[in-house]
Image 1: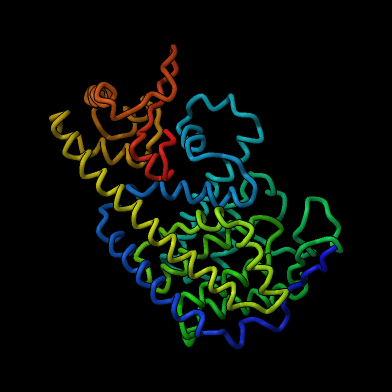
Image 2 (image 1 turned 90 degrees about the horizontal axis):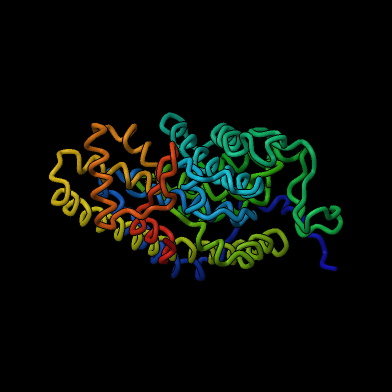
Length: 374
């Protein structure tokens, strides 16, 4: 049996890092992040055009914690399609993903007037855990009892990791908040790596710590001005390298190996900055192509409004498009018919009786998925 790893009391923030290992990684990570941010700043209404990437990030971050929902299922459920056929466990998974997005929006709204802080963290956690599994585990409140990480139902002496004690958690969170705002750190990306690891090691809540810790990545990058909007998607790397992700985090407390964790995190940032740039570029190119196509196809003054609405809702009910797109109903129905006839939209659920059809925009969804899933 492996020895239980306990929280690294007195070792945060790390006194030393092996900068000779980190410096060769910091430059490429910064450069990739800067290229992505430059593209992001050129995207008109990025929150709308990149909304599928935001949903995919919520899906993947939640999947690391064991949910099984796909992006298609989440968007179809949200559109109000034939979602009643999902079993209760699937609906619970989907709701956790929807809460992730809502929590991220809530944090962004708070940070328009507040810095990234314990107040933002607690309030965001309350939204994340609202009415989902774990909602009875004190949403928005730090835990007051021990917790540990290991196989389901294992006793503490068989755990893989035991976070900071409940008694010392408040001082740990105070130290974390102070470190978030430290201005004398040698490098902001290394600082971000350390604060993410520390948050996960503190494990301040009874549930939702992993998801909230990953939200801190774009929020911190946004606060320090490294990205102009908090839309950076890192969970794909962590999900693809889940074992290494957990092992590197564990090694911080077990071995004091902050440098090894920073190496892993910097590679994650660089890799995902490149992927994010590629996907954002593909979405921007798709938008430009479809903008011209819709203008020629519809000859309507509402063509761009229709396109923007579909980019924001890549799976939707026809009745919602007619009612909520801001386009006169007869024109909205005509545009939908043209989009279907020209294969820009795919029927996910056929209309039946009073039940509206559900359509999807496969070209956009496939970019977000990174494969031809639709």
